[in-house]
Length: 224
Image (spheres, rainbow, N blue to C red):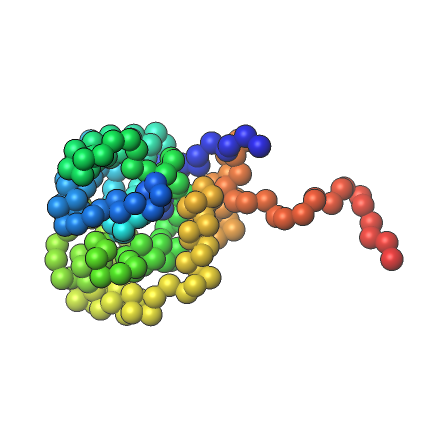
């Protein structure tokens, strides 16, 4: 089966996942992470992409971004890939690719679905992970981040917003929602309401997976 073209909607948030090859440590230490942040900062500015959340995990990169144009997302990831992988290889004395194939991404509906995606990205997996959570919790100011309107609506003051976000991260994302978010990003599907998924469908490219099983023929009747 031919691979579907990537679904990218200009001006909409997207959940991006990029996994390392052979589960290699893509960010071995603080120096790697600092170098990646520098590369990411330059690429975001060059492509005018807004970053809402990120996680630099041991073997996986997660980003929640809004590209201004459909082509901006691919250009952003290509710029990151070229510059960071070259620096990583020089530092670690290796050659070849760091990433396991092309990046995966799916559009995310603004509002509550976006907040769920932000929380999932920022939950991390262990103490060595670097995420944007300190920014949203008020522990530090991260100039990479552009807070989306949904985050601003969590409270009228920074304290209220940070407290609401702390409560959300403490409760975590439900396992079913986390699985759906990952499945959407890896499959290139839209995440959100049925109306959002339907609106995201473009010519020749559905925004959601087709129902399992063979479709019923028009006019077919059940027997028995």
